[in-house]
Structure formats: C-alpha cells, structure tokens
Image (cartoon, rainbow, N blue to C red; front, side):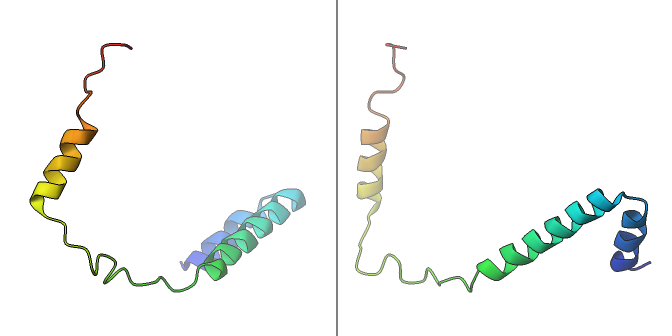
Length: 72
C-alpha cells in the first residue's frame, strides 16, 4: 500500500477538527521545505587563513587553562 493511501486511510477515522489539524501540519511541512533554499558551499571558507597545529594547541591551552574549576 502506498504511503498516500495509508495517510488517507488513517485520517478517515479522525474527527473533522483533527483532520483540519493534519491539514495544517502538512501545510506547515510544505512551507518549511519551500523556505529552505539551496545551501551555500562552504568550500573556501578558510581561504587566506593558515592555521597550524601550534595555533590549535595554543587555543586548547587557553580554553582548558582553568579546568577543573574549584569555585563551584
């Protein structure tokens, strides 16, 4: 049985109010799909930056310098 047939069959037993709620939900799903446009490529996001392993190590030392905190 196709998905559409299953949906139709399941909604037949619902009250009119519930069927309207299902319709609103389907419409909201369609709006969500339309609102999303094509994604921008992230290629080249770091172009012009030269991050070395030393830069990463330094950032880690800074972030973890006061761990664990004893004042909590």
